Amino acid sequence: MKSIRVLSVASEIFPLIKTGGLADVVGALPIALKAEDIDTCTLVPGYPSVLNALRVAAPVLERKPFFGGTARLLRGSHNGLDLFVLDAPHLFARPGNPYLSPEGLDWPDNGTRFAALARMAANIGLGAVPTFVPDVVHAHDWQAGLAPVHLRYSREQNPGTVMTVHNLAYQGRFPREMLSEFDLPAEAFTIDGVEYYGGISFLKGGLRLADRITTVSPTYAREIQTDEGGMGLGGLLRERVADLRGILNGIDTSVWNPGSDPHIAERYDVDHLQNRIANKAALQRRSGLEPKPDAFLLGVISRMSWQKGLDLLLDNVPVIASEGMQLVVLGTGDADLQDACRAAAHANSGKIAAFIGYDESLAHLIQAGADAIIVPSRFEPCGLTQLCALRYGAVPVVSGVGGLEDTVVDTNVIGGESETGFKFSPVTIQNLAGALRRAHATFRDKAAWYRLQQTGMSRDVSWRDRAMRYADLYREIARRRLA
Ligand code: ADP
Image (tube, rainbow, N blue to C red; front, side):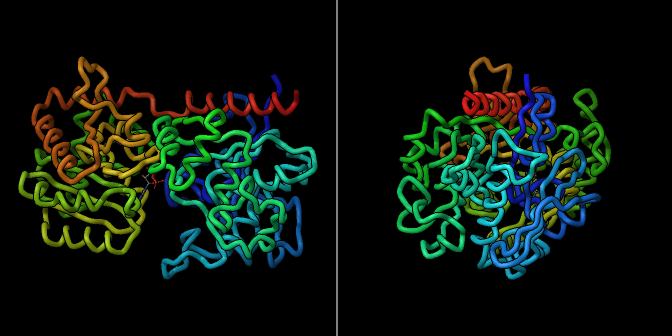
């Protein structure tokens, strides 16, 4: 079988630049796909952190003018990832968060920045780099959404396209007057193109015009077809149901491996779970929590946004503090939530700790030291934190939505040999309190808790099987194109 070439297009890639799960997926999937004979090259913006990390990068194209400046396309590699980098300093030479200014606001030219990324993706798709002509262009989230649009409107021989939704809440919406600045043809401004409630939506255009759509869990694939979960795009997604599938994310099990993790106090595996005690002690020390080995220690690692439901957890602080639980929160995001977490920690010192910021290393220690990981999301396309938790023997306590529903088996499942955690729904303060109490009660039964940890750690959360499903999808599209 001929190997298939895929151009993956995204605004983040782990380990070079990451704000969330998107980067993890975009960084891990190409490696997992190698076993399937899929040859992936990923196009990412040339942010400073990306350019600095590229050891050898050769210019393969130059475009001038390109969205208001000069752009070079570089080809290089990093840790087994084959990369195209769009080196356009006028758009991307900005350190820090890829989307936000130092004041925490969206960069005003975000539309132009990611229109440029998608335009370059389409150029590569149409054969601009003769050494890498893809069979499939795979666009991730709104930032890449215009790639399938350009390819569909191009009159040239073009590759197949996949649009993956990692989070439907971010749709890339801009005023219609930007059409020509985004280098879109006038004909694209229709209901069958990028037009969306009188403006332009990059994601909507991609969802309308890509050959196939995927999202990151089967339950989220169903939820986004509803009026509530569809966030304005439910109707379109219902129309395209035949081309839509939900493929669960995996995690990079070499990065997330308690047996070799350099960030934790003591390494362990499923047969040496007693070593977690040292990690719990280290986490309590680092967080200023009371050094109690028997306290039920809850961990949260999360973006702080309405989606993630942290306000529901904060409303449960009285339960946590009065029932002998401890909580450590690591996260960054909305100022109100950050402040509320700091205040809860301040008012409950020794019981609750808050780390505001992004800290990859601390995230690992929390997974290794917390007894339970809490993910109380209002909606969650897939969620990676609970997958890491399963792998680390931290028992997940999650809301029953999206990928959380698909990856955690509640202890209430009748006859469940396969139970791995605690789920609650609908997503309310009281139901979260109930799940925390159920988890706490089980925690006191050491044998039952140990069984949960063991079952969780035996789950396959790797990319292997999930990558096969992407490989099948790519082959299907490539075959159709050749036919
Ligand atoms: P989302 O992409 O919606 O933020 P996911 O659960 O899919 O949520 O992925 C989040 C990823 O980012 C996980 O790998 C999680 O460990 C990581 N993460 C989130 N916030 C932080 C933080 N403040 N510090 C370190 N890692 C974080």
